[in-house]
Each structure stands twice: as structure tokens, then as C-alpha cells.
Length: 212
Image (cartoon, rainbow, N blue to C red; front, side, top):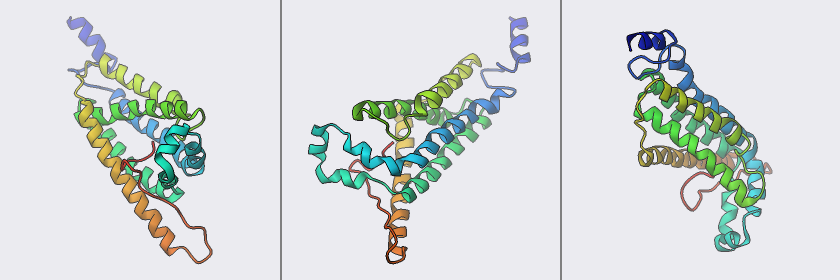
């Protein structure tokens, strides 16, 4: 047992159930890689594709939602502010992961929520039978990076302290804040736009959350 432990420590893999060596930084930092890829895609495509996405919803959904669907087409300014706000959360979570060597519940909660949200992107594309903002990087970046991070944590013997309801509450609340700030920024831009300039459009979704 002593020999095995020494070998694991020498590889920088396991030290008292914590990430060590380069993995102490690389594993939590992988959350930022996923965020940059996925939210970067949303930043580039969400405002431009949302109208088409909403038009491809099943007829029953469009009929039930009625004119409220039009309010879900967010402006580029809305998305910019929202993504920047979410970046603060993921940055704080990654720092917590480094500080606690992967053992922090806050880091684990946010990492788990971000990994799981990739399935939401893919479900949205299945529902609309086409591209939705964020779906391209969900199976190609978000899920593989999340699975890799989980495997490194397990290999390091890090206990799973994540809690799904708590993670949903934390990320969902911050998401609502990001949405609200984005809506305020877009509304301010619309009020201050010169006469004749295109008006930014943004509105809060019926559920109070962001389209993600």
C-alpha cells in the first residue's frame, strides 16, 4: 500500500483525496475552456438565430405561446452582458476548484450544472429539428471536458460533494441575474440610440430564465 501511494503521489494524481500537481489547475480550468467555447458560440450566434429557432418550434408549442414567443428574440447587447455576467460565476467556481484542489462543493456544483446543461442544448435542437445556439460545442467540447474532469476527480479520490438541487439553485439564480442585467443593458441601449438607428430588442422570458 505504501509503495502504491508513493507511485500515485509521484504521478501527481492522488494526495489525500485531492488534485495535485498540474491537475490541481488543469481540471478546474477545464470548466473555463468549456464556458469559453459554449458561451462563445452563443455570443456569436444567439441573437442572429433565435428568431429562426423559435419559428421551428412544434406548431402546438407556438400556438400555446402565441405572441409571447416574439419577446424571446434577444439582442446582441443582451447576450454580451449576459455572457459576461455568467463568466464571473464560472471564473469564481474555477478559482474555488484550484483553491480546494477540486474538493470544493461550489466548484463541483457549478461544474456539474454546466456539464448537464449541454443535454438541454441537444434536446432543444432535437425539438426544433435544427441548429440552436450552443448545440455545436455541447457534444464536442462541454460533455467531453466534463467527463474528463469527472474522471480526473475520481482518479484523485476526490469525494463528490456536488448537490444537484443546490447547483440548480445557484446557477439558475445567477442565470436570472445575467438575463435581467442583459435586458436592462439592451433597454438602455435602445433608449440612448440615435434617431434612425436600429433599436435593440430584448425581453424577459416567461420563466424568468435565459434561453440556453
